[in-house]
Image (cartoon, rainbow, N blue to C red; front, side, top):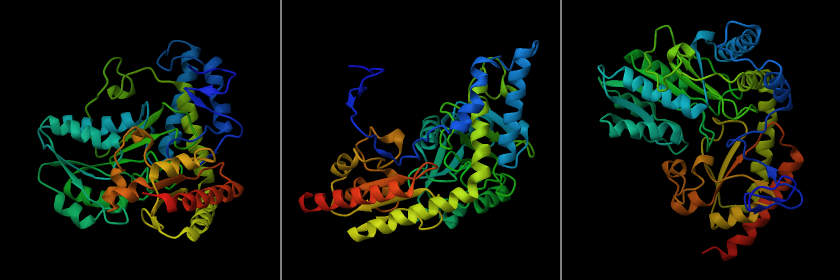
Length: 400
């Protein structure tokens, strides 16, 4: 049976009564109503193609895209011409990694990344390996942070790119981008960072870090799905080979008709995130600490990732003596969360991020990623604590 517009069945899954509390904000976030309000006129009234520069409809759309580009650039201390719109961070990562590799073929074929990166970074690297490139996958320390000494040792004369994410999508760890960027700059190696989880949540400054390429997306910061951007430094110029051809949009780096409603929504979402960052960060830290303290009565807990150098809305915990699948099943009617990256939920393997931290298979399977967000309340945290404690206590005596 398919989706019924007025019914209770969606994609074969029965939904009855009250919906579960949403704590999966690393997978995606709801679109903020203020973002929707900004987007609506560009679906129906200002619907022009921003590439149509011979009439008012196109001018209106082009002006909106220009303003959005300026907003996003200011958010990361870049210039508007350095923002290339994409369909999301996955495309931005592919454009950055493959684009640098292709543009720098004569210079070298070695890249450096980290074992805990998102698959949208790891998979392009594996693809390049199949073409003859060499990739060094750095391990992380037990707290999830990169060992800068190992990074130093990994550089080679033919290294062309380092790609290390700003904020991890599973354990929320914030990597030391400024220190990494400085080391790359000393050696003339381009530095890319996947900042999908970071934009609008922590300060980002591509000049201070310094970062040469930065991937962004809207749907992790209460904007629409299907839109993102890649920052590409112009001074000094970063050579980049386009991965999509046809039309010459975005200075020839990313062809395809731009989608003004999404782009306007993206910019509005980032604008709101920056304006509310300090207060929201403090609020989420308080809620996260309340959640962590509420779970302490269980014992046998393992915090995954650095205790403080992490996103304020992230808590990733492994539970001893519990079957991971049974834990998720026992909680799904109360709280919507996950045990790892949303893009990897079809996999039966334990989280490679948690394995990289040194967790054994049992602990990696019995882990929960709590993603708190803008609409999470203290009352909801209390309900989640009660549900998790009760579920773990019920499962522990019968765990295999």
